[in-house]
Amino acid sequence: MSQPMDDVMPSAPDPSGDVAEVPKLRLKGVGKSFRLPRGETIEAIANVSFDARENEVCVLLGPSGCGKSTVLRMVAGLEQPTTGELTLDGEPIVGPDQERGMVFQAYTSFDWLTVQQNVEYGMRLNHVPRQERRERAEHFIELVGLSRFAGTYPRHLSGGMKQRVAIARTLANAPAILLMDEPFGALDAQTRWQMQELMMDIVAAANTTVLMVTHDIEEAIFLADRIEFMSRHPGRVHEEIIPAFKQGRRIGQKEELIGLAGYGDMERHILRLMREQGSDETAP
Amino acid sequence: MLGALVWILFFGVWETAVSRGWVNALLVPSPVDVIATLYELFAERGFLGDVGISIARIIGSFLLACAIAIPLGILMGSFKTVEALFNPFVSAWRYLPAPAFIPILLMWFGTGELPKLALLFLGVIFFLITLIMDHTSQVRAELIETAMTLGGKRWQILWTVVVPAVLPNILISMRQMLAIAWTYLVIAEIVASTTGIGAMMMRARRFLNTDEIMAGILVIGVLGLAFDLLFRWLQRALFPYLSQEGD
Ligand SMILES: Nc1ncnc2c1ncn2[C@@H]1O[C@H](COP(=O)(O)OP(=O)(O)OP(=O)(O)O)[C@@H](O)[C@H]1O
Ligand SMILES: [Mg+2]
Image (cartoon, helix red, strand yellow):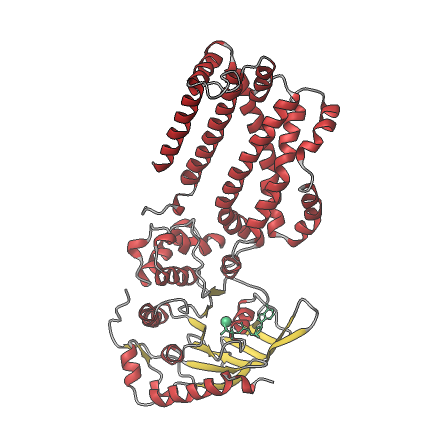
């Protein structure tokens, strides 16, 4: 299991840094309408704009139904935006690709493959030579703490372990950005915070940009370098929140985070937002 | 184990009923007689040939049906356009009971092997296609989308995700449809055949040899059970990852 060696991870990129640099991920005026079977359309999100920087953990937070998953799926290329544009490293996003690997809330381990084979799967699709494939898989399996289970079939793994397989499988495939849609949403509280702490280790070790969806406030503040708080009907970015009280550090353990001055205020602030935006009076 | 009890009771009542003369022994032979007749059929009357023919008919027509139904069902379940193209045709055929085709099949193909194979084939293929199509379309979207975000192309995903995900269910569908194939086999052999287990039973009827008829029924039952066990074994051999025990 994850056993953070020290409390403080290498420092996160400074969110208030140079404005001129090209952001890793950029959404500009992105809107999405779904056509319902009856022919009407519903506007799921409207005019969503935000940037995520290289090696940053960006969290999409907001009440249920505000369009977090829709935004993430458009970044993944699984949905096409109705308006606006999405770019990764300055290149427009068209369709799903290896460079934008996604971890879902539902378990997605391939039952017929062992843990090792699951983690090698993406590399096999992309014709990575066998030797390199094996070594990279072993590296990431170790990173998520599953070395003992490399030869096991997913059926015998717990939910948390299955999610670790999914994370290792995505990272081993060397994506430019890791997308996660409530990856710990189906886990019990204990496993959930263990996974959150493991996530901090992984982000530090794998040095990757992460865009993650959650509606767990504590999880968002713990993991995020930047929080995009979304509101509903239609979904849009209501407020960008930078957990500045972390002073650009990545905290390895939750009790330390909660002990920091400024944590309480931020949690209260977001709770209030959740209450305002989540209640249905704000709906049209 | 408890299930065996009922069987023992069943044979016990049967044997007693015959030996006490509660039933006409000409119409209901005792279980012991049936076993003796069975031995005689195999040892002296070349019954093995009939059984062999029946099995060959089942396997031949069933494999042919599978060879078409599996790829077609998977494609129909994976691609909307393929479904739109074939499904109206396939689902219409499911409303036509295969035995309704016996007269016309006999007219077209005479009395050789072809009408029997055709009946078995028609009786099985359309249901098999539909079952496989449904199972394929139920492969979870997250699995496919995961593969897409790992860089998988359409055909790669079909081969490496959809097919392995649906394979255990295809085997289950095959097992179910094979049981139905046996039903059609017996119909075909009773109605229009001079060879096979069913034909033997019809010959026996003419001479009031009820023991032979019952022996035939017994053999059909045992063969059905054997094929079912074969499929269960295949299930475990092909998909070890589904088993409950550790590795
Ligand atoms: N495929 C679709 N067809 C029609 N409407 C959709 C579709 N996907 C999403 N929506 C609608 O878009 C809105 C946003 O949905 P989305 O799943 O993105 O929200 P979310 O923030 O992820 O919610 P949750 O926290 O419950 O997961 C909802 O009103 C939903 O009903
Ligand atoms: Mg969602």
